[in-house]
Length: 236
Ligand code: PGA
Image 1 (cartoon, helix red, strand yellow):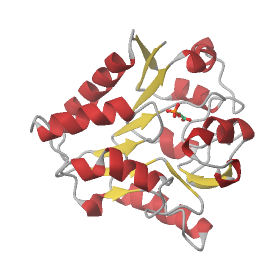
Image 2 (cartoon, helix red, strand yellow):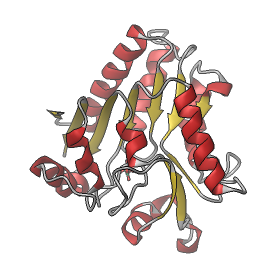
Image 3 (tube, rainbow, N blue to C red):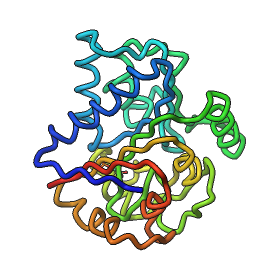
């Protein structure tokens, strides 16, 4: 079931998302949190950093798993998702370094890395609360249209639409990675609760399509209709 929260500003979306994660951490300080990168969660991270530095919340006992990472990018790479997370969240909060996880985009054996990541999530007890953005093409994580609903962590070829939409983070077009490791759709659906953020005119079509309720692998986010506890915070 999807609960819809319409907001009038990006800041309001970030604040509401921060409230949901704050409540989760208050109820269960050792929560396993699923995190996302991109423009949608930036304001949310800023607010979580503020709350953590004000000692209103603590990540000291939490564990985090990010949705995805580019193949070929590692923590030393300015455009990696590792770097994005360190810069925007990890370095500024009290989460122990050993307990934040992203897929290793530099792994030699990518198939083995997918299995390792999936097992690590499972061993942690599973994700309590997962944050998601939505791609203009309806992707969640990097699960592009056509991804199977029963997919687990996998290597995926990025579509042109996604590469174009992420081009802003790269200097040259040829620098945009062609592949990524992403939690699969079933991995995401295994989270106990999910919060999806979608703000801006460029997300209106995707939100409308999600609202229409039709469930199809051609529009990956539509799988969320089958999940018992999803909150979509959206606006433009
Ligand atoms: P964005 O990306 O938050 O940068 O818009 C979302 C996504 O592609 O999943």
